[in-house]
Length: 266
Image: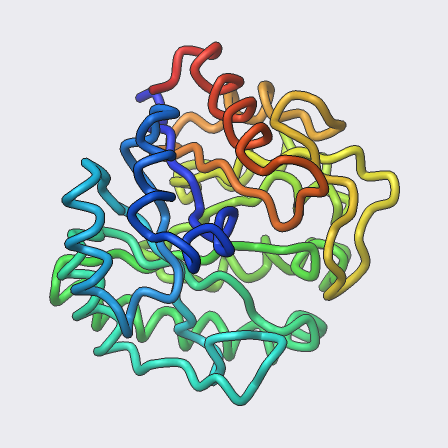
């Protein structure tokens, strides 16, 4: 069992990045982050690689659409780059794992649709392996709210994936989808290589496709983060993220980082 490395999904500070790329990365570095999880990197890999290097930051994981035609699930006019372009950009960034971050809720309602998504990611993983990259999938709540034969759609999906495809479990969204998080972590076992360490009161729990209003710094909500981290024996990354936060995002990020360092992660 290894101790997961701390990272942060850059979506958390998307507005700050848009305003000041280097300043935002420098501030993350000053908090203590040496790893980040990039998003939207396919069209700006050179720029990001240079900025990461200037600020002493690595991006071992990143989010990119591999099973959907759009880069943005809420704006289908934003066309997703092809898998080859994604993997080329990932290689420029030194990324070893590319994770699909979202597949439309309607595609989790039947075994046929789930199988199509699994087949697409399996094919992407085969291509990625040729350039030394692993493919993964990141959940929201739709993969838990939807069930097939009284099983979470996420677990049905995991069974259909090639063993080379990994899972990044978002603990908040799993809890918001109704999962008992720790047993779910245990059942996913060695396939689980990353956790989104995200907390919330779950009051109210967000619905399908809605923006959360309840997220709080890690350790201050209802999601059993500490127990999930203990149960995730194969996790390599513990990744801070906020989808939305009503307070000072830097305070939320710092508290979440301190929650992880207090547990011996670095």
